[in-house]
Length: 204
Image (tube, rainbow, N blue to C red; front, top):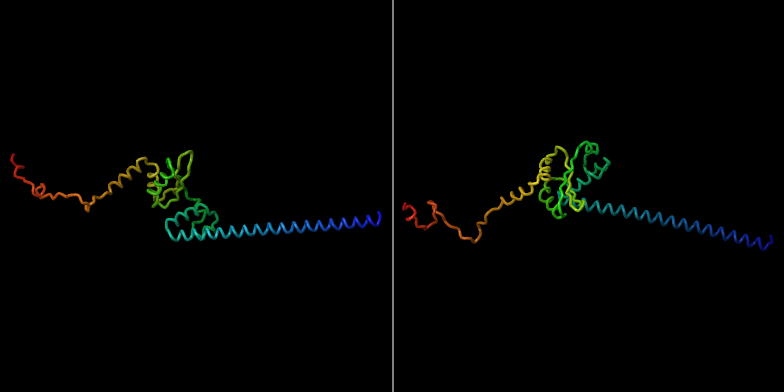
């Protein structure tokens, strides 16, 4: 190998080594960028959860019905006792010992199911869900066995006449409007209107 060829070989080796170092630097930069991106995503996710939690806590404090509904959802969602303690929920073992029945009722539209839920379930302290199944909207609740409202809820869901009877009850609450402009007839003690000529009523 000539001196000239040897010098060229050394230059090639030097360039290859430099290229190797540049590739390593590039990989290191890309790794840092990926780590930085993941860290930012983690921070964004944490902030998102904090903001959502703050919103839900504010919503719970503003309305008792919202609070009970959110706690009912957390009761189903949280499976670690240390997490459940943060919301004063019963230990998971106590929950698992309880038995629940699922009540379902089908409706032709979401609006119909939602209206039924608001009319009859708002004061029952139960978590409701409405889902579309096979073209019908199904209103569903989970009811603890032997709970205070178990029988009443069963009647609401499975008595075909319940809604009709309840509507009749609402109609029975109608009261006459005594402040209207309609003419009121003054009836005397004899059962006839005031000023009525009774001279002919006892002819026979």
